[in-house]
Length: 205
Picture 1 (cartoon, rainbow, N blue to C red):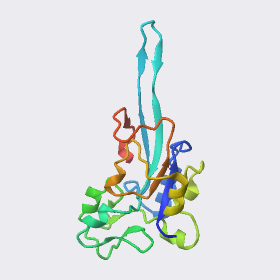
Picture 2 (cartoon, rainbow, N blue to C red):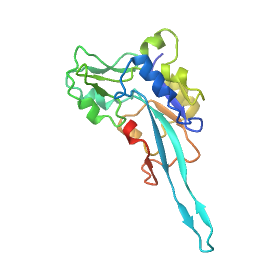
Picture 3 (cartoon, helix red, strand yellow):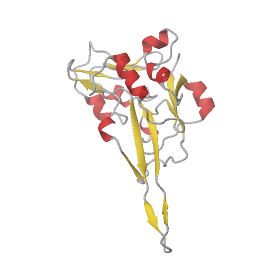
Picture 4 (cartoon, rainbow, N blue to C red):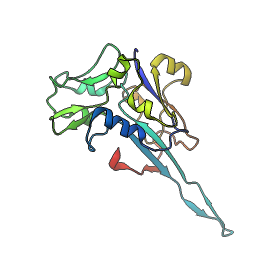
């Protein structure tokens, strides 16, 4: 598959984090390394009206996020040893024979995809379950999603189906790296840069 890409239906995602657990299990990572993370974003408040009644505009939604194997990956540009690279299929991964654990890629990635493995002294990240794709299988996170909120496909097919890149709060501006990520917006989704909510699980993202 050329340019494999993820699609997240924010209406279907319940924040169950099954995708996170499946990813950790498949890649045998410890609890400090999360190739896939589920962001909980919420906000709003209760307002008392002049007649003593109350109204609320409280909202909450989830976004399952991993490396987006960007069209213009800033992690690859920043790597001084070329350990971080994009292959002929568009998958961004780390060559541990070249990686020196400098963490430059981690510092510049707006999605916090590259993560240091302290045991190895090397950077690690999602490789789109390349071995599964070669076997004709879906990535572990996609296969595990109980609501089918998380799907995947080649970039051109998903682009025709879902249109151009869309990003909602609290994700970064897609212009930075041109992520291969497609989102179906939750009805409560706030626009890019909105300050109406905050991430409720910062320790996980």
